[in-house]
Length: 308
Image 1 (cartoon, one colour):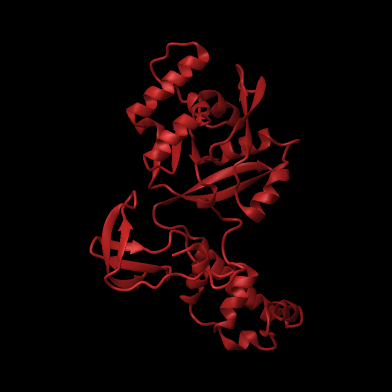
Image 2 (cartoon, helix red, strand yellow; image 1 turned 60 degrees about the horizontal axis):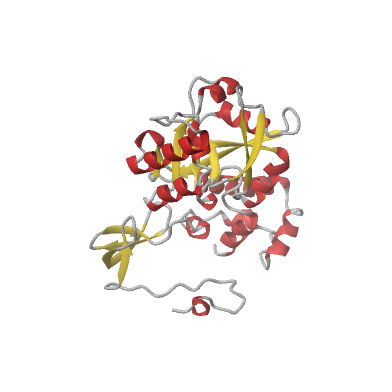
């Protein structure tokens, strides 16, 4: 199937999925190379399509489709739509300013409930945090995370010098104080930062403690070549530097991992005022759910109401 054939129009506004039927073959497994035959169809707890195969159930989509989730919710009380113009999204928005305040608050409550349900992470997801200067926080809130240039600090206290690097993913932490430290450390002045609560799939994140030996060997070689040292093990503080190196990151990706967990160095923990904490590098920014951003938009809500 060619690219233009999977879209309903040349504008590429609507995705047209191919028809699937019992007996069709798919490729499943960690590396998508294991053949499986479709035996039936079902839905998961979030109303997302599931293929029942001879190799077990397989979710059709990796992300959750908000519209499908909304369809699984109970129908809204029709009285809440009294005097609400549903002829178009623009008319809907305008009419909201004309309905009684109590009715508006009830509609808002329905939207909040649906958003809260959508924000609940899948099984296997963990809650992490990201601190960012306010000048970057608004863009993250609107558009999600993007891989950009980063800055690394160094020296005896970790703050004597800075160098610019090419980030290989998005850094998150399981410690709120550390997220605060990282956010404020890059801000122009005190309290000029924001902390985001995020959810990521932990099932394919590898811990630095359990890193494959071949990756550790390459890591040690890179560290020793860079420092002119003869170290025999990788310290916690070295992982930040190592995960800026494309050779290491590509090796980790090639083993099927989506991210790395490592312990922060003693100096960083001391500056952040914590005794323990882990940092996570997540390779794909799109895989990170942002609690303050992701969920049902007003337009999604209108489209759901229009189907009731």
